[in-house]
Length: 134
Image 1 (cartoon, helix red, strand yellow):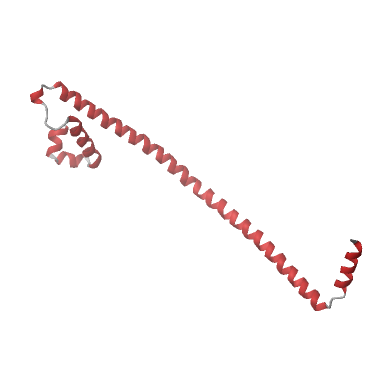
Image 2 (cartoon, rainbow, N blue to C red; image 1 turned 180 degrees about the vertical axis):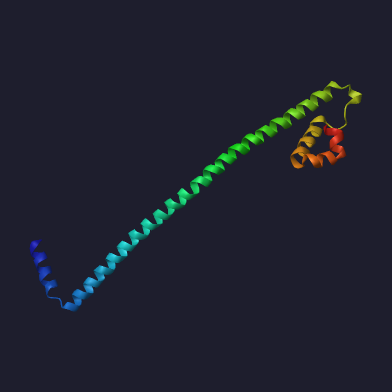
């Protein structure tokens, strides 16, 4: 192995100066490309970390809002179900000839939907709502 290395060194030592400049330029170019690759990878990683950190607060707030919305939706569903059950019980307590032709569940559901879709001032102006939902 040593004789081969000595032969290669002799051969390289015999190269003209222009060849050494070319070899040095090629080595510098390869070194620059390797450095640039790793530098770009580091810059991309830093950018991804900064972007993830910037979005963390928004994701946390969004998660909190989702939880609050879920509780509010459940509260509204419970209210609606209670109103429907109350209307059904009230209607069932009436004698058959006095019962409404519209199912009490449907009426209570429509009233609950109206309360969700309209403001109190708008509901006060609606005669059907006043007649059936109060």
